[in-house]
Image (tube, rainbow, N blue to C red; front, side):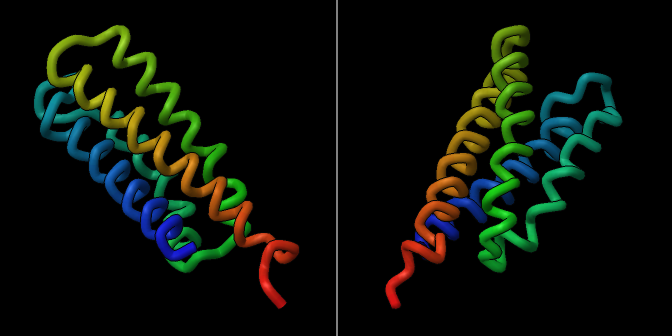
Length: 115
């Protein structure tokens, strides 16, 4: 359980940093950064629940991260260069978070806990 929580927490924090760095410094849509950096804000909503191991957060947060997975797929296909590599990173991080969170929620169910 601790390994799943650590994996989910690390991948979520890395995804937040990737989104911010991507849109401000690494490969923004406009020189000097873009307002697309605000896409990282929804990822802050589940952060405390993920870090504290709240099962309910692990149940709904994977649905949120699917939007980032979809964006990564779209941008990996349509862009070239550094943006394409960053999109691949977004795909990997969102996929890792998705599966870690789902399995954490599954294995932390009250019916699966030992008495």
